[in-house]
Length: 628
Image 1 (cartoon, one colour):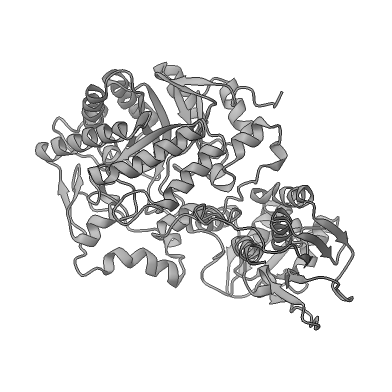
Image 2: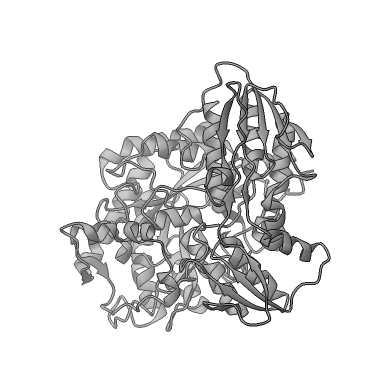
């Protein structure tokens, strides 16, 4: 017995039989080709999740009018027969590995960056001046700002909106119908309509953006009319044998007036009457509020959307797909409590595509945990391909790793995350690997970081277990100061933070925590320590050395962490207040590799190379391991 009997049990979605109740959550990846077709990168992304055991693969953000109404040229399309062959390729790879596959069809509405770049008007239910961004939204790096502004740099760029007419909306319905027909021709098993996240169908559902008083607005039922029309038309086209459902927001955060669950239930019920077999329950947050994303469809609070899913299931009596930061244990509980029928996982399956297969094999402790640093969705917001802090292969699945030309003896010096990751990869590639750690324990700064930041919980255990499983010979209390008998040395000794981390560690090991603390620095570590100390009731002042705090994180994660710190009462000031204990967590100095001489091949990774942050540590470890 795995302990996940419900999660791993077969189920039905409409007429579709699924091998388990785990679905890959639909998401944008920016891995398609520039014409919206499927290439090797996109095919490999979905194949990895199907091969990893997901019962249902939902292909996210398939544009119904590509390139019109799309966020990026690399967003997949289903609007032209030129898209057909690639969609067939996705269906084939999913079925080859035993997964069902569905396409999430979307018109991106006012989030259609390609329309802005081309100067095309974007369809809206009503003209309304958008709110300005809140102060925290401006905490971006120059590089992030340049990426965000790229669509506006085109000579044709213009932000234009057009209040949708009846003819416009008839065209929208036709586009959904045409795309639905095409994905079924490609061999897809089901269709999801995207009626959330601020896109066109959702913009009609929201009283914030839909202020019409005709057949398309004025009441919750009339605001649902476009969704109902699309549902009815698609159902008529595909017939009763193909499952059809919609992703619909249960509420809107930071909006007034905002969509409420009561309003959403009216829309969901009407759409079910029009032909939906199920509802995928999501949420939305005002995008001009920095924490809108993490208060909406990508919640930072574990299980935040489950209560809404439970009410939808209870009141509508149809199958429900639940989502929103659910561990396997939380997913199993949601199913046991009949809050949902299927669990959609996004971040968890980016971090470890093999999560379902590992659960089925009884290897729960070998699932790579998500660190919730939001580099995945943060990359999409920068108009870049998806990436992951803890899984360097995410978005690069098509890059085949070749085996080494010869087996070599490798000593990895340093047992932090970079060293452990590199050692595991080298051993899995067939090398003879020793890991030398100078201290009496593994983990480096991560061992302390896990105690400060609960989002990192389990990562060190996974790293150590992976290295042990791969056959890495681990030596504690062994610094790289002696003669090394090896072909290759990988220097992963990290960086010197000064006395700051040691001081924080003493607090955790039984020392008296300060009642007043000044944390100097702008790193993620500095902000996290400040938040942790404040939650322990200390008076805390953060003294930054960079206006962008926690720049190692993706923007949603940075905004969330800083907002939580401010809400908890952390003060930000240019100088420390008198009498406060002081800890410095600003700059860190890379520990230089020793001169080993004798022609030994040396590689430097992680903080020791000058790279900073978890994602950089994993990336450098993967790159070096692939070259040896």
